[in-house]
Length: 152
Image 1 (cartoon, helix red, strand yellow):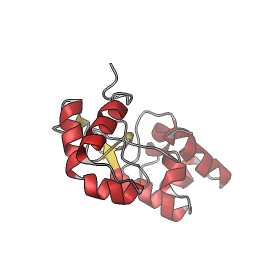
Image 2 (tube, rainbow, N blue to C red):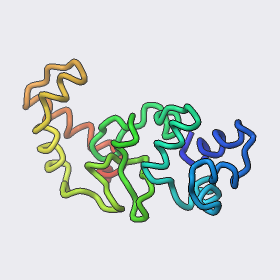
Image 3 (cartoon, rainbow, N blue to C red):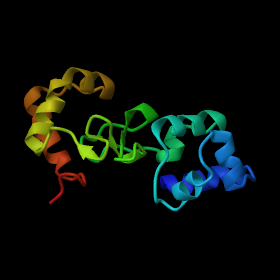
């Protein structure tokens, strides 16, 4: 499920109009229809409010198992999400890779791999792996090439 469908479903399951939903979230009444038609996206703070107010996990809103399509980091918390130019969330990228509508300084797979290697100890701990730097470099290089940002 994509973000716009998730927001529509959260609102309609509660029998709320777009205006009521907007009032509950303290946003303009124009914001909700724009989210629901995919024209814009809520900000990270608003996404957190939706999650808290309506008791819906952020993973459910953005899609369970979502990962950054640049570095493959899990997108399981609102604070990890990237942002668009208008400060709306970008559910395809993490905040490290994509902020305010622009990609980060890593402009090649090799640069991204170097960035990921810098956090290899944390990666191994989080994933329960024991990659050496050489093994991780091969893994990351191969895997990143399958992601939309790097796919040619």
